[in-house]
Amino acid sequence: MASSSIGSALFLLLLLFLGAEASLHDYSKDWFVHKGNAFVLHGGSEGLYGSIAEFNGSSSSSAAAASNGDSFIRFEKITFTRTKEAAESKENDPNLVQAVIFEVEDRESIGGSAYGGQRAICCTPDLAKMESCKEGAIIYRPSSKNPGWPQVFGVSFEGTDLVATMPSKTIPVTKTGMYNLYFMYCNPKLDGLLVEGKTIWKNPTGYLPGRMAPLMNFYGCMSLAFVILGLFWFYQYARFWREVLPLQNCVTAVIALGMLEMTLWYFDYAEFNETGVRPTVITMWAVTFGAIKRTVSRVIILVVSMGFGVVRPTLGGLTSKVLLLGMTFFIASEVLELVENVGTISDLSGKARLFLVLPVAFLDAFFILWIFISLSKTLEKLQARRMTAKLDIYRKFTNALGVAVVVSVGWIVYELYFKSTDVYNERWQSAWIIPAFWQVLSFSLLCIICALWAPSQSSTRFAYLDDGSEDFNKAETLGFISPGPVLSKDTHNSSPTSNANVLHSINVSSDGDMEEDKRE
Image (tube, rainbow, N blue to C red; front, side, top):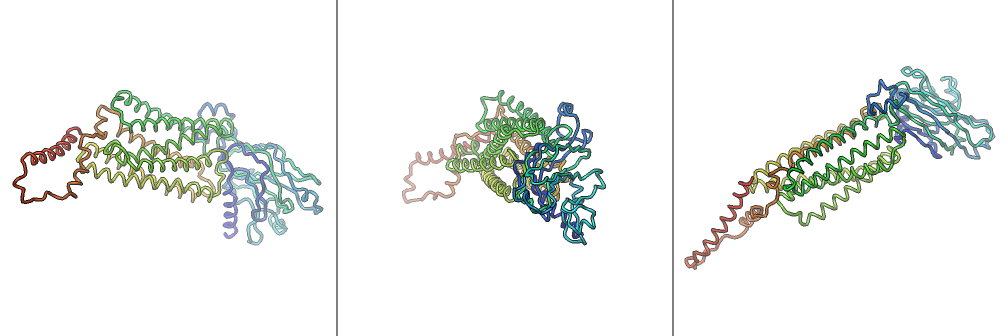
């Protein structure tokens, strides 16, 4: 049990060095890392489907028809370069460099231990006697679940050659699973070894990695959903364009940005699936439109929560603070998404990624806090002014936001549980649900906003009206804090005209509220 847990911990460390989620893995003078008694270079990790019959993912039927249905890992022009010192060494040490491919369920079949000691990857003299392995080579045992696996093959340096070339080789994949590739050597004298070349990983329906494959169909469906929402919104917009409010113009911009973002993500994944290389330009545009949409959405929700255009004509001194928060969020979100999606993917260490995630999470939390504080104040104003129509729509809006926040917190907890209990990516086939959920949640909230604030014949009833009724709260407050009339000895001399003016001003204030109630 002890050796098994040590072995699992060792491979956990190895699997943390996940490379780019690209089906063409390029190696350009990459270095090996010393792990245990071996020198290791991670060559890639991808979920691969064994056949089209097993594939329940994202590619369209036309893409599947264009593919020959094979799933494989192909080695092309893999060369290893050692140092001159290693080549001139007179010692007769093994100069073997090996490639090890295994499915994650077979991770315990790599390595061994002598007399119950620490688990080793390379065969030692003691293990050579016990395990019947070759000294200086990788220890492995045949899988009981996947015949013919793990796949282990290699190349040796001849004489004083500085370069050794691995023959081109294609490894067919017949079983669905998460496959890992490592290049390893055992001779410490080869320290400084470099590797160049590439490997090609292919699923039955294309080059899109298995864990990302369902997202292509997902973004296609989301594009269609945005089109349907846009048709409804633009139809209402065209019908009642004379009644359109500034808030509704902002919602129109968010819908347009959402359409562009979803469409770009679909074409990004489609191109990736076709070529095996992620299209950098399309990815950057998709990330940028997504960051703009998220920023504009949050700013709109915040200013609506403040009552802008409903109970106040401007944000006053808060405008610069709202814009500063929005710009900061956009920059933080853009940087995080670019690093995660453009070029190499999942190539960050935990601390580096945490450094980028924390600012976005902090700004999101600040947005939520500010939104609910503003909503509370706006609801109090509407209730005090007895603006029943506006109060009703704001209550529905508050309830929708509250449900969205509760669901988000619950999903974050589930996401943390999912990732903490899936250290070897064994549940890779359902991993696409994590990013898809956030898109569905934001789209659902956008649909609710569209339903509440859709352009209509009575849109202006929710707009700010400068007819005196909007200053009710101010007048009410002044009435509480200003001193009452002082009776002097000349009270009996006050003119009837001045008393009539006072009564007239009171009537005007109360009539303003009555008019607001009639309109609503």
